[in-house]
Amino acid sequence: QLDLDIVAMVGHDLDPALLGPRRATTRVVRFMPLTGLLETASVLVFHGGSGTMLAALAAGVPMVMLPVAADQPENAERCVAAGAAIALAPDARGADEVRTAAAAVLADPTFAAAAGSLRDEIALMPPPTDLLPFLGSLGRP
Image 1 (cartoon, one colour):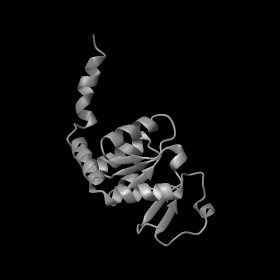
Image 2 (tube, helix red, strand yellow; image 1 turned 45 degrees about the vertical axis):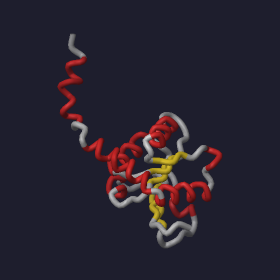
Image 3 (cartoon, helix red, strand yellow; image 1 turned 30 degrees about the vertical axis):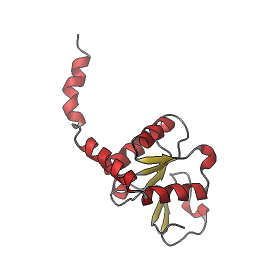
Image 4 (cartoon, one colour; image 1 turned 180 degrees about the vertical axis):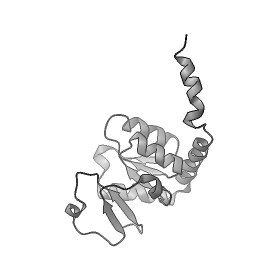
């Protein structure tokens, strides 16, 4: 019900056709490179995994997080604390709750500003290759 173009990735094991009819502005795919998608994204709704979270933060995209297990709850907690996300509890993940959370992130510019600040902070970090000599020295007596 939001006036958005939506791209939903369902993974390699689910046939997008099984999800039935959808609006012309909604595209369901098995997989696509996330980096290019995030370049034009206004909000990301996802499970809160580290790789996707870091890609969103590096792109400065605010988030709605639906953590399930592993590191996802902690990732969501940290992103909420940083002001870049809203996290929804397992019992609050219906279509209405997700839509309301996405609308709130889009309507409140503080989420985008916080995500942008984190993007800028990440951009200032040295590349991993600059850290290799230091990391190598840790193993030497």
